Image (cartoon, rainbow, N blue to C red; front, side, top):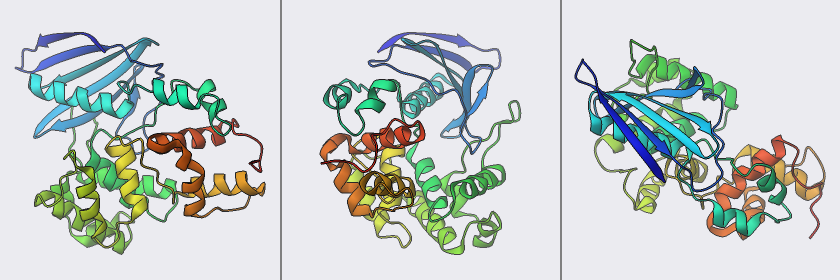
Length: 310
C-alpha cells in the first residue's frame, strides 16, 4: 500500500521522487548489495543505476521501520523516476502479499520452521527479466563465484555508467547482440554460452521474444527453442525476473544437494531433478517460493533432521 509521495524539481531540469510504502505483509529489507555490484549498500540505503529507455535513474530504498519502506529516485523525468521505483519495488518484493502462503504452510513439516523464523524473507529478484535471463545464462554449469566474476566483467565493459556515482547498469540486449563472440569469451564466458546469450539478445532486439509480455509461457517456449536454453534457465528467469512464485528451478545444484541429504541422511547424496520437483510439488502455486525458503533453511540450520520421515 502506497502511503504518499513527494516530488521535487531540480535546477538541472530533472526530478527527485520519494515514495513511502506500507508492505501488506512482514518485510525485511536485505542489508547488502548484490555480488555483481549492480545493487550497492551506500549510507544505509540500497542503491543502483537503472535506465528507463535512454534515461538514467539513480534509485534507492531504505526501511526506516518494519512497517514502512521508502523509495527514492533521481531522474531526468517524473515518468522515468516512477518506472524505476516500480521496478525496484518488484526487485525487493515489498508489494508481495504472502499472507496466504504463510497461513497455509507456517506449520509445514519441511519449511514451517523457516517461515516462522523468517516471516519477512523475500527472494532477491532482478528489476527486469532480461537481467535475470542474462545472469542465468552466465551461471549455467559453473561455480557461482566464477559466474559473478564474468558478470562483473561484462557490466564493467558493456554496461552504461553514471559518472557522478560510479554505478553501472546491466548491458542492454542491443549491446550484447552487437558484441563479438571473441570479446564475450574474453570475459571467461564459454563459447557455447556466448552463442546462446547473443542469440537470445538478438531475438529480444528483433521483437521475436518479449520478456515483458504478461503471457510468460509464449516467451518461455520461444526461449526453449534456442540451443543452450533449458528448463533451469527459463525457471530462473520466471522466478527471479518475472515474479512467478510457482516456478521452481529444480535442477539447481543447491536443491539437488539439500534434497539428497534430506531424503537419505547422507550429506554427500545428490537427488535428481524429479525428486526435487516431487518434494516441492505439494506447495502448488507457491512451489518456487517454498524452494527459496528451503534454501534459506539449509543455510540457517532450520530444516528438519534427515532423513525425512513420511
